[in-house]
Image 1 (tube, rainbow, N blue to C red):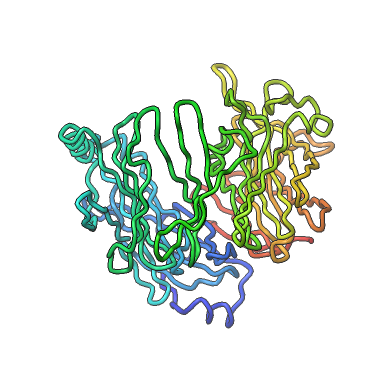
Image 2: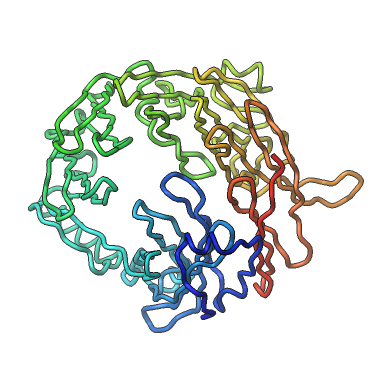
Length: 511
């Protein structure tokens, strides 16, 4: 291990400033992960690199983490023991300002071991106060009302057998999800799982000592045709905001449910209308065809804003919808954007988001600006077929005013084969008033025969777009990967296959 003098983040930031760093010299292991981390206000805190040193026993591997601040100053590092099934760890910061290392399975191990031997690796917690690392504690809430600490994960086959025995003896599986909240204590969701339906659901609040404060019961007699579901959309020191869905056959009804955080009593329970039932059913989550699940909500100026796909009664995507909940008076506002209304701004656009030559618009990101306007970034995507590679072309940006009235900006892009997306990442700038987003494009230079990768940096400031292009192609065995930087900067990582060269540097953006 190459030693780094540990200090607090505040001291490191105030005493030093670095614009570049050699990751290959910070540790001796093989770098398996490098990612940015953000604080609870969505500000960039810094970066975490994970290095793998290989197996130390039949059950463990040695890893090392290296933490950099947003100016690339090293502020902490340490060796730690990970499970043999861990291929690496991705990092994020929790509400306690600890760094959580979430494990990634080592796919090569999955090919070697049988299902009965595979154990899901443990999540780790790093304290920045004393540079200590430990396993994250997980709890189960049992049907008899007791908390159980999960000391050691079961292997996959053992868990499957245990679940099978419980279902056979009871006729259902008791399920619970417990998580800590920054307001103090824990929230838990519990229900009985009968495979095709569930019932006896509860939302439970516990204090720091795991003593029950309150329990809100719903779906007490749910069956296949009639049941309720609860979606938690926001919580603060005083209230818990939920969408309560009632399903009666094919009918779906939705209510805004607001509970008192201290007592669990209903403060508000009122209908949500104005949007198709299938839209409200999926409003809390946007799953893309090629880019995973997107974060599609934000709380701004005491308003909860959700933007999702608009879905008709035939489950066809017809555009986008916005749901706004005012936290002060609980008023609800709904708006829609249909693809049909955008045909004059997007050539060859169909009513269900299709465009030319079998491509369709697939969401990539949502932006929620301080003035109440919303941005929806899409990419033209063509799915993989039996004889065809997946492809992407242009980026399409739908930007609205505070009343959700849309305009469109199209960013033309070369066709990319065997690519699910050329989109990279985004960042709010100017205290959340504006946004910058980044994508790449494999382009043929004018007068040259070969194609090269270019990075496209796009800003929307005061309603005006600006674009900057930065070459990021490398030669021979070298690679260049862009990462998000502190506001006004981008981080570029340059490395080769053997990792003898692995540099990162911050470059100032021109806006």
